[in-house]
Length: 191
Image (cartoon, rainbow, N blue to C red; front, side, top):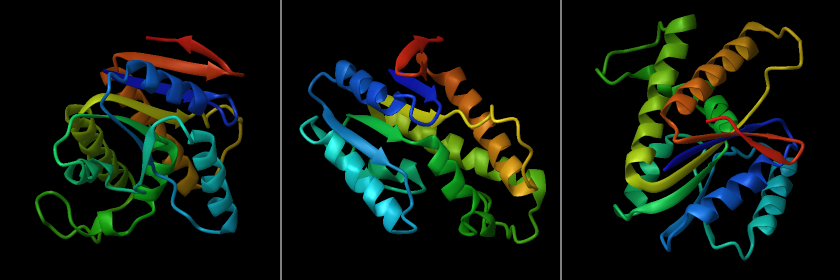
């Protein structure tokens, strides 16, 4: 089963996602796949707070800020339940990591990739990782943020990020069994 949980900052989407993966769990190992890349002490404090909130819920926390599909290699092919938190961080981490641009699947040099070609390359990589997680887990819940309703126009890199996150969110919605939007703590089933 694949579930997508979507909502604004502070909407309650994380708590709902934890509840949903716990409801689906039938005794499998329960992994919390955290994608936040730590930049400063504020990030460290946020991670500490999130870990404290998860205490006693049965999660084994794995921290992977990119290449999330590779986590299955660490799980020894064991069917597991995975909560990926969150796609917004993962997209940013992949997008602003220069390593992804150096080589593509064919092994060709991508130093000259620009604009839409970069977005397509990152989309393809994240899609591949998501499919790997979906196929390698019993249940997969993915959390993402709604960042599209503030009405502002940003510089090109932020607009590219928003477009890529939107494309990824639509793709995840398409392949998910359930889709939920959480608004002010209220989960609303969309699919």
